[in-house]
Length: 387
Image (cartoon, rainbow, N blue to C red):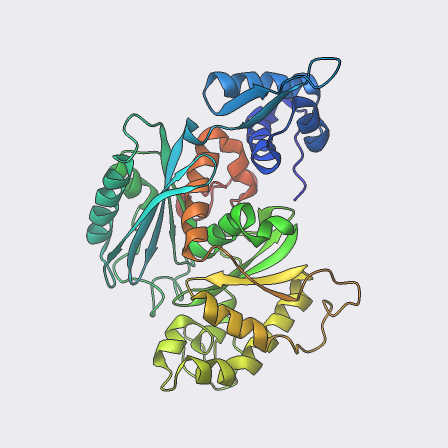
């Protein structure tokens, strides 16, 4: 992922985020190395580093001299410089994790709650956040990020079917989350949060252009381009699960028939009368065609499959993709398999949700890379979707 700063004065908050990210990825590192890596002057980097050190986000150290001259000061993220809570809301319940500034999960919790109402869900979230933040008394809590199923603001597709929850129409999600937790709040679709978490902490860090295929109760996916998730005009890009793939196939709650997620999702697996192996073998041709379609549309370095599905199931699907049809990705000079299994699982969703809060608080402008904005227009439903 190529991280580049900007020399425009208005880009200073963005540069803070870029410098922090560069240090996180390459620590221990020096001011000169950061400047060369992100395209800023050493003076600009030094000014940002000084501010971040004073605020407790960075730790600096100087090695013992091994020869002539004084070795440069090296920098790394202060893990205890701040914490954020990542929340994942699904039709099955609520998960939450306390994440430190280095991206390490301090603790994660889960509460079963089938199809929770907004009142039930936010009561659970408030309790989980209080329980988690008590683990670091006196620690700086930067905010809370919540990931939940999309799409947002689509009358025929939002809040219908097994992948969503009844009673969530017109709920002011960001405001309710802030009220329940007392923290700065950020909202994102679960598949986008998972892609962000995998990009920062998983196999996504090895690629700059990849597609993240999210297996949840339903099926979604997002293209990550140069480290940023492509969001679409209304923030709903990636609803691949609602592409019709079987003519006159199973009816889908969205109103169409034969949609991909009716065959390829955890909900579809739950409806299958055979075991996991039988299901995987049966849907393998559909999965291979889906991967080929993604490749021809986006030309990714690889398709990363992850989400809530257990790793053995993802590995079984990846094995079924070893013999894929031809596409633009069928190249002799490939350095990665066409399908790669994610490392993070639900941890990627929680870490990605927490990263929303970290980035949103430390560098609000960085969120514009993640949100769908045109001419100053806000993201869907007025929600600020920060990266």
